[in-house]
Amino acid sequence: MSVDLDLQGIRDQALRNLLNHLNDSVTDQWNEIAPFEATDYTDPARAELERDKIFGEVPFIVAHTSELAGKNDFISVELPRNKVVVVRQKDGSVKAFVNACRHRGAQLVSEESGKCRIFSCVYHRWSYDPNGELRTVTLDTTFGDFDRSKFGLVEIPVEERHGFIWVIDNAQREIDVAAWLGPEMDAILADFNVEKLVSIDPHTYRRPTNWKILQDGFLDNYHVKYAHPNTAGKMLHTNAVTLQDYGRHFWFLTGRKSVDQFIGHDVTWDESMEKHTIESCYLAPNTMLLKHATHIEILTFRPVEANPNESIMQMRILAPTVEDSGLAQEHWEKRWKKNWNFLVSILHDEDFPILDGSQRVLSSMDAGTMLLGRNELSSHLFRREVDRLIYGTSEA
Ligand code: FES
Ligand SMILES: [Fe+2]
Image 1 (cartoon, rainbow, N blue to C red):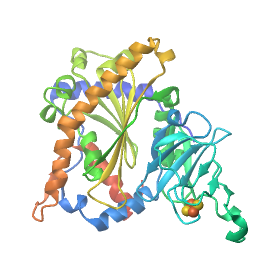
Image 2 (image 1 turned 180 degrees about the vertical axis):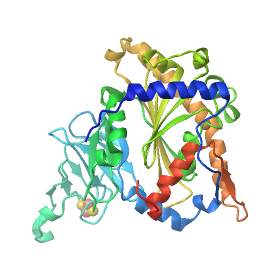
Image 3 (image 1 turned 90 degrees about the vertical axis):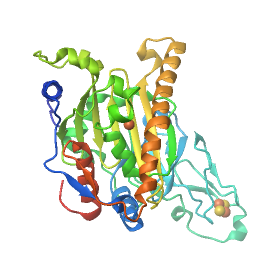
């Protein structure tokens, strides 16, 4: 399923909209203010719905292709419904399994990542091939006979597309990433050529915060200069977004301050504009992708089991390889280390304290009704998709 999406036209129009917005101090808007309650972030029953109706039903990203580069490379990931191991197969494909031995359920893989020709259980040493088949039952003459083909590792649906590894966290489902993305977002991701990039030192954070608060925090263009006055706020515009809504997913353009030089000029999009803007995508249900001139940042958020108060956030920098960058190895390493340090210091010093604090006080029994403004368009669309998935409110 592919379409001829006129990306040049979309970027041209978005750039013009953005420059007009900046000139007029306006932004794309939702049609109304939306009131909401603190229980959206604290109610265990709602969190259970989100675990099952969102993460148990639709595809989401768990890794970049380069994190499983060679055969028998694996990563273990904690998903809301299952603890999972993702393994690169001999033929280059990828499989994912529940990380539990089929004998008595010991944790099969304890490392976060590695390379393994056989998965051997620490408890009674049953072993499994990288394709999940049960290979050895120890002391099998005394164990008794059973059909080993039925006791391989339990498979979780997984697909590799556009340089990412996607799963649905539910052994009963089938995965079709292109259908989930829809033709427009599928074409946009294809255009980004993410598979040519490498993931540099992915960071994983376990936070005492609802996953939606984190997702909202990184969709939010309203807080930039207020919460980050001396860092991001110095370089990026606040409250100026132009957005393309694709039903579930959306694409939007925001500006660096340097884009101001084009206000009032008749400009068209070309690659030189990349350093003055940030192209972003919300990939439903839980991912924010930011495309910069030199690299891509990708942030994913998911709850820990059905706990409304705990989540796992992963952040990745995807950049051209040393060879493609034309930089010396040392310079390349220095550049991305510096980039990571900058991002991590903003996260730790500025975003996490605010977002963790929200979670703490939203547990107040009398927090009161709160408001999402018309200017917070991305958050409205994120809420729309979450509500649609958990309550089945409307079709995309
Ligand atoms: S639990 Fe794995 S071999 Fe017994
Ligand atoms: Fe922020």
